[in-house]
Image (cartoon, rainbow over all chains, first blue to last red; front, side):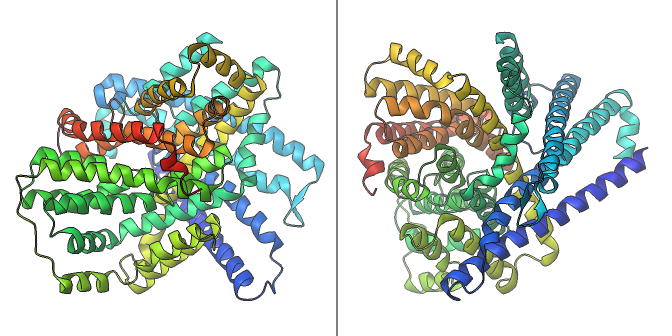
Length: 171
Length: 417
């Protein structure tokens, strides 16, 4: 169980990093080439797709970045409790808010899934021939993964609360 | 409805991720309003339709690369060569370097970590008092928020649909006012400590300039490019990202290729956090406008205050409380759409409103209970949080004065428009 979670964790981190590197590199590359094309090459390439692509990358960066933020526990929150309380109560509070977050993300993910399925039936495309729903599919996927991440953290917290010696050993 | 709101506030204070809180309030609103719940996904996806947003990941990436390289050290060396000979010089170095660095890295606490670590020991060595140093470094950590190309400025422009170029120009004088007032205070506090930290040497200035030769074009290209209108903001961001990558990774070789995935991840984690909050706030704003919340708020405020001056006083009080609870990014995406129409009703210019908003939120970095800079400084310099509070307090007062000045003197913000 532990090793499976660990392996998933490593694979997930690797996938996120790869996706982020590719997205950032593409974004910089396309944006800079667009400027070069306009300023130096007299717009000799037709780059009408570039603006659209870069904007879609922003959405993907937001989603993949959010998954990564969840894994690194870096989502923006009011970080007060950990500064004024200590001990088991902090763990219980974390468990409550993480269950809440997991439920909300599952709900958003579900709504996004419904929307994407509907978009698939409309047949809209972006970047000339890529189906819109395929590009938007990142949103339900991301929220499913984020929801899963919150649940994993709840499991880890519970584990640490009830089996502290095992949790220490695993660390 | 009130019960749900109370529950959400409790969850937020307990530390639930803010995006989940905002998303829930939007979905509950949709449900009560009989709006299709898919709207939340639709609004989230509309992130891909906002043109200027590309600047946020690009500038953040560039800022993180800079802070990972030795650029902070070079910046401190250069500013000390230029200002170090003056009495209180090192304090000025601290303020100038931090302001510059924050503008580029977006006030996410990176400044205290990257520059504070160099400046704090240097200040001590130079005979400045420990309390002063701690307060100075902590409050400098969010200075420069009003200078281009800071992330909060860009985000305000996106949310308020105000020209970012205008905002960049509007921030110059108010930002300088903050700098000058803090500098004046620092010199006054250290008036007994007359010993300048070094004599002025042209050779040292030259050496520092040579060392920083690759970074020097950066502010000229970015700021010059944007302020002159040669580049659009998102173009300047792309150029900056590529340029910083070339100089720090390929030329100075201070960041190894193997470190790049980590740096990209760290910067995009921040971007993901900000854009996620923006996305769900688009949904909650959609609901609030649908439910005519701004109009109701306006009616409420109009009963309380009757003139622009009294409105601005109320606004400032509100923003100070808001800044103490919420981080600057969440505050912008959540609150700006609500107060924008109200401010317009009282004849407050939307660019000026942005500057007031950000300047007041900057104080939030230093006010308990959740001031980010206080916690970072406490952690970084291993001082008790109460100690950091009290050391920062005089600086907070000075900054508050400057915010009042910025609020009630619109010309400061609007002179260059």
